[in-house]
Image 1 (cartoon, rainbow, N blue to C red):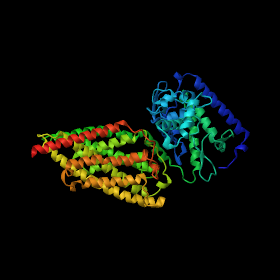
Image 2: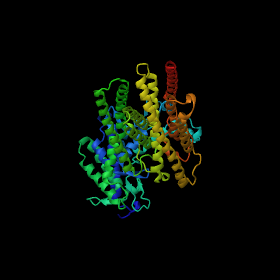
Image 3: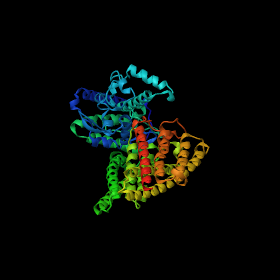
Image 4: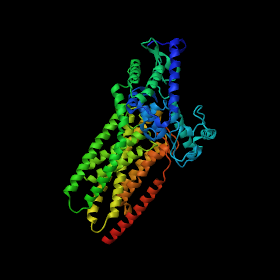
Length: 597
């Protein structure tokens, strides 16, 4: 397509641009003063159709649908909303409707603010969400309130190590505010390819380059992306009332086709890939699996423990357990499909960040359950439980599920080998933790009547636990050595005592000690000691995955970091409960041995 400068555009083009802008402004003003009881939002179907328009975000060409979900994951920590005046809406509807009803949406509570930091008090709100109007003096100038601006400036001036919880949360909230502000101003609609750009640059619809002609209207007016987008938004706003989206769809299809016409080098994702990505966003595969695993883990654990405690084998109970196993197998296949789909969409192995690593670890845990299920169904129940716990952690607001491109240091085949070995070893250690925990409860449940049955189960689970940890330590050791090779290629040195490297080595050393406990004399030797060690050794894995990434100073592995979560109080309670249960189990086992002697 021929390049024409903005200064040389025809008078027709300029006049039409002014007219369209005025028309859109009038429509927005009318919508703002109509009364919120009459507010209508863009239909889900119309919003999803715009979701097929491609956008450049974070060096990745993706459907606008993905960008909308990413925006509101960051701003609101959710992608589905409900408001009194408009009912239920999703992220894509919000993304399309905010520029059409700015006055209304500026009053809605969309910006998430973590509690116990003082930021809510600063804004004068009680709940977890704030509106745009809570930040600004008035909706015309969008000037941030003076006291708020002063605090943001003070927090930003501090060094990261000097920032307290209030400062960190305030800066995050300020970032969420500005992301949402960009949506209000249409800056997020980066849908315009710049013709002749050597770097394949794209700009938003409000950029001057967006007014360069890319086609001609039937009336002889030279069309640009900016003018077509304005026309689309005007007809879209009208269609909310009339229900007739035919004209807006026609404009939209033309925009999509023009993007495809630009792509002579095959840089854009195919139409089928776009559809798959929208499907991935809407189905929320791993959130659905989290819910399914929670129910399956509960029933499987209860039923398999009952099976262990019962003297006689129940055919009905066994049949129900096998039915649940079949359901778990279906969920595992769906989990595998989700990982494969994410790999296909991003073009890289799905374990390059914290969220992906957790999803992969939960998948690996289930794989272990199916491998060792032939010994006892209880281990599958244990792995379903840990898969649920890990996916629940992945769904926490600190982990971003966004589909992203790889950072340069990660663009290596070592990502598949090294990271897969390390993260899969975490799956084995996690299963060892759960098996140790189950055995701990078995020790507490032992009595004279069930001593033999429970002792057999403890012995079996301990042997499986040992096998699991052996495989885990082999993978962790190989992964650590391969990490050194990758480090030499990327950074020019094999080992630098980076925090992540150091704690990876700590994992290997600690679990090596756990495996060698059976060779130690005296009270250190025994099944109970081994199971307790497998429980508390897992803290090294948690420290490596969570502590190093989110709480220690940044190192060369900082690409794995995400939003730093507040250290929860329930962790301290959990540690206290585990220590208390351990002492009770040790005491009860000592009494049991004394009686037998």
